[in-house]
Image 1 (cartoon, rainbow, N blue to C red):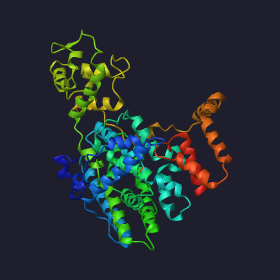
Image 2 (spheres, helix red, strand yellow; image 1 turned 30 degrees about the vertical axis):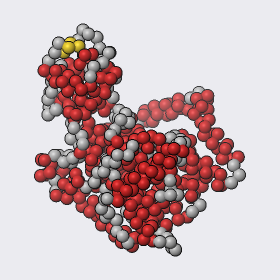
Image 3 (tube, rainbow, N blue to C red; image 1 turned 180 degrees about the vertical axis):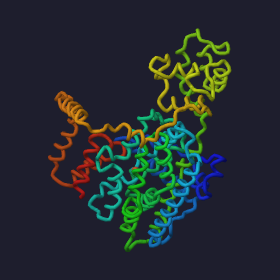
Image 4 (cartoon, rainbow, N blue to C red; image 1 turned 135 degrees about the vertical axis):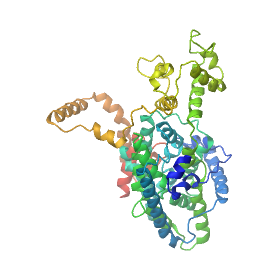
Length: 488
Ligand SMILES: [Fe+2]
C-alpha cells in the first residue's frame, strides 16, 4: 500500500514494493488443508489431500518467473547482492521518513493490526516446512536445515519460539480471531504444513522453499520500524532481521542445506529444477505486501459490525430507535450495516472527524462503565476509534513501543528490589498441587524417555512432540530443548 502522496515522497526503489510479490490465489481449499493438517494427528485422508494440494500449487508456481540462479555456485553472490539491495532501499526509506514522508505501509494502528491478523495463518506455523526433517536427525547432511527448524522453535525457550511470540503479539492486541480470513491468506500456511508432512516426497522442493523464505526481505525491516512507531512490539520482526542474516544466519544455513543435499551421483539438473519449483512456492497466495495493500478502514468497520450483528440482532431493547427503526431491526441483515452506520452519523450518535469521546456510540462501547463494554475486541475497538476520529488531529501521539518499554522500566532502588523480592517469594509459595498439575505432563515425558532403550526411540518421541501443532505447548517446548541438547 502506497498512498499517492507517499509515492512522490519515497524514492523510486521503494515504489516497486506494491508490485514486488506476485499474487496467485488458487481455487484449492487452502483453509481446509490448513486446519486439517494443523492437528496433533492429521487424518490419513488429510495427508493424502496434502500431496494433491502441493502438486496443484507446484503447477501454479510453474507459471511464475524465477530469479534464483540456475548454478548453485552463483547463489552466495546472489544472496549478498539482494541483501545489499535491501539495505540500500531501507536506508532510502529511513532518509525519506526523516524528511517527513509518511509511513509507507500502515495508515494507522488499525491498519497495522489488520496486517498482523492477515498474516497470522502463515506466522503461526513459522518453520513448519522443515518439520519433516527432524526424524532424520542422524543424517548429517540435513543438520543445517534441522538447526533452522530448532531456531524457529527457539530451541524450546518460550521467549524465543517464533510461533509463541506471534501468538502473544496477537493476544496483546485482541487479534486472535483470524480463522475467517480469505482463502488466499491460508495458501502459504497450507503449503508449509503440507511440506511438513511429506518431506520424503518433496525434499528438493523443501530445500528450495526454505532458500526463498529465509532471505531478508525489505518488508521485514519496514514492518518492524512502523510497528514500533505505532506502539506495537516489533520483536517478532526484528528477531527475523537478525536470525535470517546472510553471513551466519538462516539465509546462510539455507544455502548450506542445499549444497549438502546436492546429488553426487544422481541427476543434478532434475534436482535443481525441483529446488527452483519449491523456491517459487513462496510467491503463491497472499503476501505481506498484498495483505497491507488490501486494508480499507470503512470496509473493515462495516465487516466488524456485520459480524457482531449475528449475535447482537436480538440483544437490544426496542426502546432505542435510530431513524425510526429499532437496533434489532437494523441488525437483522448484515447488508444493512452500511446504512445503519450512515443513520448513526445522521442522527448524531457518531460524529466523524472529532474526538471519539464526543460520540454517544463510542461512549456506549468504551470504558468500564459503558453499557456495551467488552462487546468488541481490542483490534475492533482500535478500528472503530480510528474510523470515528478520521482526520481529527487532537489524539495524543502514540508512543513508540521502545519508548513505552523504557518508561515502564522501574529504576532499581532498594525499595523496589525489596518489593520484587517479596513478590518473588510469594510466587514460590504457590500450592504444591498447582505445581504438580502443571508439571505432571513434563514429568511423564521424562519418565517415558528414561524407559526407552535406544536413542532412535527417544528422538522419535521428541520429534513427534515438535510437530507444528505441538511444539509451542509445554511438552513440545521441553521436547525441543531435549532434542536440541541430544543433537549438539
Ligand atoms: Fe521464524
